[in-house]
Image (cartoon, rainbow, N blue to C red):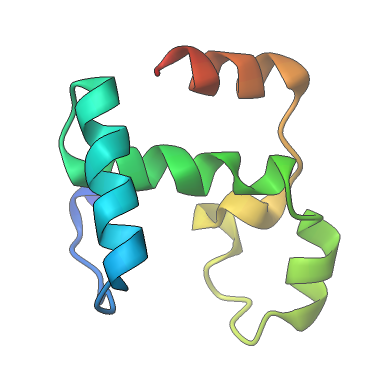
Length: 84
């Protein structure tokens, strides 16, 4: 794990639905909730067009650390889903 992965970032409060859902996903994965959230974030480019997100971005200083920098391949998606 590199230093960027270890840095703590601001995170907003989850809604009740999000907290309950992420908790249950984490249980299904046998992992902590932050790992479940990370999995969900990594899968986002498979359901949201990354180019649309990038066009709306207001901070181009963190592109290298952004999940939307490129679409994920079917193989990457399968590997992420296999974590479940």
